[in-house]
Amino acid sequence: MRMGGELAYCTEEKEEEVIKDTELEDEKMVAKMRYSAAAIGGGFSPPPSTMKAVVVGYALTTKKIKSFLQPKLEGLARNKGILFVAIDISKPLSDQGPFDIVLHKLSGKEWRSILEDYRITHPDVTVLDPPDAIQHVYSRQSMLQVVADLNLSDPYGKVGVPEQLVIKKDSSSIPDSVNTAGLRLPLVAKPLFAKSHELSLAYDELSLQKLEPPLVLQEFINHGGLLFKVYIVGEAIKVLRRFSLPDVSKRELKASAGVYRFPRVSCAAASADEADLDPHVAELPPKPLLERLAKELRHRLGLRLFNLDIIREHGTRDRYYVIDINYFPGYGKMPEYEHIFTDFLLSLVQSK
Image (cartoon, rainbow, N blue to C red; front, side):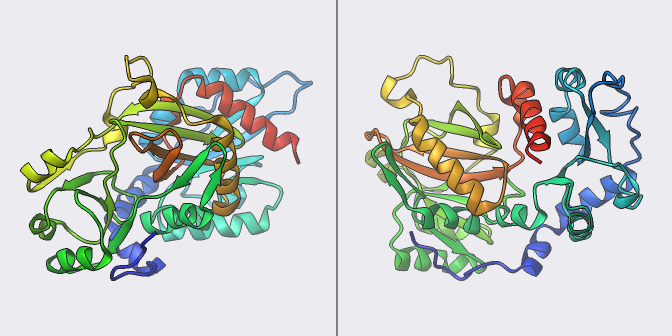
C-alpha cells in the first residue's frame, strides 16, 4: 500500500493544531459538566445486598451520553448490578469513585494526561480504552497502516486497504503527487484526522486542486453501493449493512468532472439489512475472517471498543477493504447493543 505524500506520520503537536477547534469545544463542554450520579446515568436503586455493584464511571460528551446511555441500557444494567456514574471533570479523578471501570470519549491533551496518571495510580481499574491507543486511530493514515501491515489472507478471504496517499499541504501540488504515486481516478478525499467524517469524490485531476489538505486520498473501489459496519465490543462482533456510494463505471468516469462532497455517508444512510439486494452484494463477510481480523486489530491497536467500515470489491466474493476505523462508535444504532455491552462490562470484572 502506498503511504507516501508529504507526510510520513503526524506528530502529536500537529494533530493538536489540526483538531484544536474540536477540542476547544469539548473543553468548554467539560467545564460545564456538573452531572451528579442521580442526574444522568446514576440514581439507580442499589442492587440486592448479595450482589456487588459494578461501578462504571463515565466521561462522555453530551451527544454521546444521549445516544449511548439510553433508558433501556440503564434499566438492563441496573438489573445486572451495573451502576453508571458520571465523572465530574472539575474534580480530581482520584477523589471520585471508587470505580471498577472508566468509560470515556473526550478530547484534549489535559484529559489524556489526567487519564494516563489515573491508570498508573489505579491499576485495578479498567480504563476503556487507553488514551494513547485511541489517538492512534484519530489519524486515517496510522489507523489503516495497521491493517495494511497485517496483510490478512486466509481461505475465507483477503483483507487490505485501498491504495492511498497523504497530502499535508499545498493543494496545487496534489495532481502531480497523485500522478507520481500512480493512483487511479476517481479518488475519495477524507480529512486526515477522523474528527470529521465528511468525504469528497474527485473525478478528474484538475479538480484535485480544489481539495483542502491535510487529507487522505484513497482510490475508489466499486463495492455495489454497500458497506459493512463491523461493531466490536471486546470479543463480540456485530455486522450491519449500510448503503454507500454507488459504483462508478468507466463511461461515467469519462463523462464526469469536479469534486462532489458528501456528508457522513455510512452514518446518515439508511440501513440496508432489510433491502432487496443482489445476494452476491448483500452476503456478509465470513465470520471466521472477521473474528481473526478483530482479534488481530484488538491486539495491535490496544482497543476493545471500535468499529470497522469494510467493503467488498464488486465482482469478487473474497476481496475486502477496510476504509475506516472509529473508536467508541454509535453503538446505540446496533440492535441489542444493551445486552452485548452489559455482558462485556461484567466480563471485564469477572476476568480480574
